[in-house]
Image 1 (cartoon, rainbow, N blue to C red):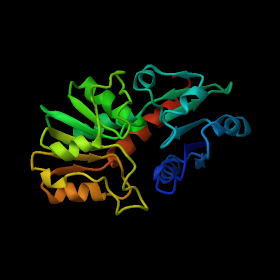
Image 2: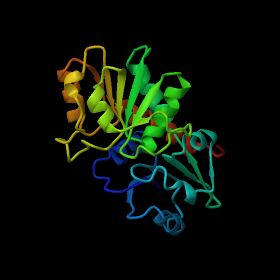
Image 3: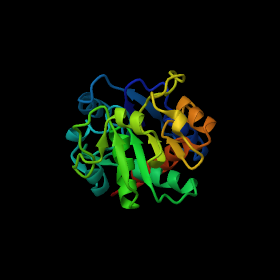
Length: 252
């Protein structure tokens, strides 16, 4: 058994993705949505489900699940967030971050060279994976957060700004804008962050990590104003494949 741990998982394609994958590979496995009201419930869930071999983690537990794990791989330690957990035969849980791999692949599909600043919307677990990748690629970035006292993966707060600063400066200082928040996810498809979309230009690239719906209101507004737009489907597929490689490796 494999699964996805989170809350309110009706929007997720992960179960369908892995169920189809298992069918094509003629594997007698199942993948379930594991909705938990509190992340601490994962401990009892693992104990009660001895056939659980691994699970993915989504909003809102990518960071809060870490204290319940026995170990982390080096990337997950640096990022400070986990989206994949391998369950070993002795019941030990090890956390990984394959969002990093997924976002790297997504960036490749844009075929762009980013010589300017990037703006990351949101400061949660997905945001930390994006920060990690941009830092690795030496792309400067700011993180827009409602919690401006919060630090990024570097532990510094100098790159954290409030949403009011975007509304005053517009998007002009940035070439790439990445939404890592869940705003606009199905079924709330008409919602989007309150931002100065009129300041978007043709030189902008807008990325939304949301993949359901295929085009969020955030991306629609960006496209209407001339920006190139990309959703999170590539990231979903690539991080899922990376998770599967971890699940199927005896020692990782």
